[in-house]
Length: 162
Image (cartoon, rainbow, N blue to C red; front, side, top):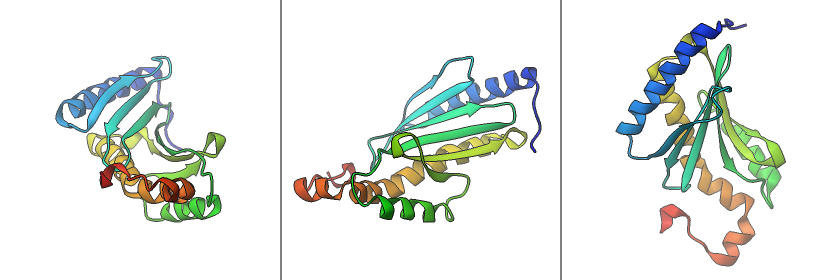
């Protein structure tokens, strides 16, 4: 089991994440917003402009042992659900530090968790990079699979095809 950190140490982690996110925001043009959730929860979000998916919002939640992170990938598929979920779950083997999961209302999420004892700028960079790159890589295929009839009916291009 990972170490349980005292509240005073969590305050230091909180400051560390705040400072890192501020630097990230100023250096990365893809970042549209960085904000805090309810301060009682030690929660942040990073909203990024994408090419395949218009926006990806990554939530960070600081707990007593871990930093949890997640992003909403897409709503529950209207069709081909088994094929879509199987594809996503098979990708978990190839993704480092995150995994696809089925969440509320059968929506598809990408989630991960990091022990606080190894929290560094490099790990924070990896988290944001992995989450963003994974969504960008798989979103077109996932959305076209889960909503195939809509795309066949409208021939609506994805953002990358415009």
